[in-house]
Amino acid sequence: MAEILAVTFPEVNRIELRDVPVPTPGQGEALVRVWSSTICATDMKILTGKFPGVRYPHIPGHEWAGEVVETGPQVSDLAPQDRVGIEVHVGCGHCQRCLEGMYNLCEHYGESPEGHAHVGFTIPGGLAEYAVVPRRAMHVLPDGVSYDEGAFTDNVGIALWAVERAELRPGERVLVVGPGAIGLLALRIASLQAGRTVIAGTREDRLQLALRFGADAAVDVRGEGDAAAAVREALGGPADAVIEFAGTAEAAQLALAVCRRGGRVVLGGSTGLGTTMQVELSTIVRGHLDVRGSLANPRWVSRRGLELIRSGVVDVRPLITHHFALQEFETAWSTFFERKGSAIRVMLHPTGGAV
Ligand SMILES: [Zn+2]
Ligand SMILES: [Zn+2]
Image (tube, rainbow, N blue to C red; front, side, top):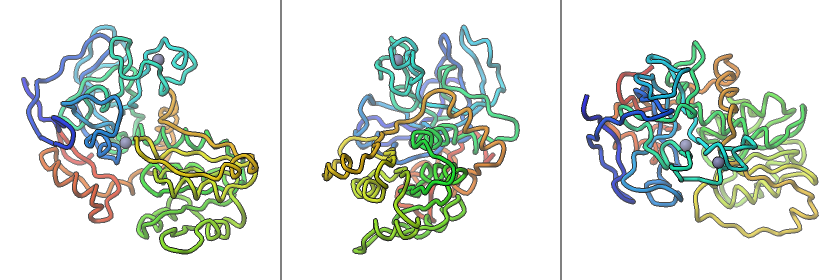
């Protein structure tokens, strides 16, 4: 094995499937055979140059799972054939934020010599047959969790952390805005505690699916009507907490508009540059709102997320709508971004069949 097949973004706005040299694991790293790897909206931000810190040529892929085939020096707690899911943020480990455990907020973002890595962003990712990743990015998959499910290691951590940022109390009214994969996972996790949970979105098929992820009601916020009023009615009053994973200004406006005085608004959708909004500041000040951004998740949140998948409390399988070989990447990409066949997550299988 001298070369492997990899999806490559040679420059902004260009995609190529090409052979690249097989990477070698260095100190604290392992070579992983990629079994299951998905595409998400962030990959488009990377392709179009809207994600700061990415350098081209770039191999994307940040939602994936695979099998360890070789470990580098100073990796003593992983061995070949271990099954791992990838959590993409690897902090430097020595800055103030990392020392607090918030390695997703590392002050040395993108600085490899400092020990920082962001798999699929600042280092090559898992839309390839094999990838080298730091040991610290890997979670051994619990028995019974498949590679396909393991590809949600990062997604489930992001969703779980946003719910934790919302500091839900049992019985509260919760709105989730944006029924994408992460929004649906957040909805499911929030519904475990909430008294009433409502999803707001713009696509009928997603809203229907949300009812299977724990929503008591779904509100279609397309069109002219008063979306905030419709949401309040569906919730039986204003929301105690809102979790947003739509990434648009309209979604954030809705989140602020439906939250009760003294409630919590967690914004998680707009991770890329370029989305702005106008806000009536008294909505926040007089509303006494806690408005919180949520970016990825700190360490061990994904670990607990995997436990929710293992126990069956969170079922990610309905989110996997399509399967492709890596050679079919172009079709997979258009299927996902054009939402063909109600695509939610399209699963690539770089080195094997569906698992
Ligand atoms: Zn993603
Ligand atoms: Zn750091």
